[in-house]
Length: 196
Image 1 (cartoon, helix red, strand yellow):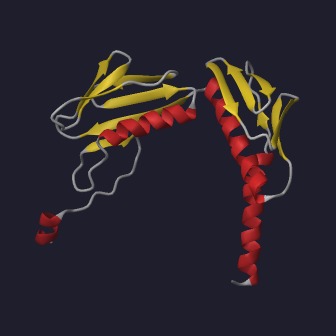
Image 2 (cartoon, rainbow, N blue to C red; image 1 turned 45 degrees about the vertical axis):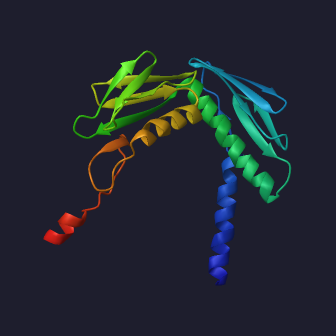
Image 3 (cartoon, one colour; image 1 turned 135 degrees about the vertical axis):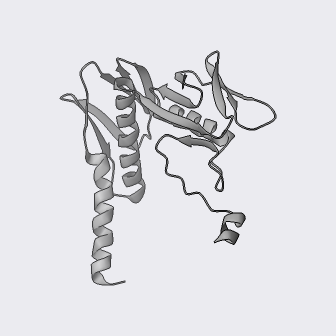
């Protein structure tokens, strides 16, 4: 490895460590309570409690959240950035919320409302019923689109992944459940290869 490459590697590690140093501005209507090992964020959309490692210090001052680490060790660098990101996600969640949209592709594939959840008909011999965890909602648009919404980014992402897993996009046919805007690369298949 050349000296220039080594220098670039060091610069990159310094750049990554800057994530934790960024302060988190508090929007109007959002309050934060810092306890031992956890932060409670309250906003217009609800309340979230985010735990954090005791080797990280979290402070609230002048309308901002500041996250500090104890040392320059690699472990503390990783905790620093992670903690800052998780708390920032909580602030965004109670302010704006999170949303993931899924689309059903395939002839006869459809979704319908079932109480607080949905029923998926995606080519199996039986319908698949999914209900959201507490704090997350599912909304159906038309018969082939599902909106997953909530204030907890992790819960929204996990539920959306669970729905997609019921029938992931097929690599050879335009069938399955995909995220809205997801770019898929379909393979031609054997018959198309023979014609070519």
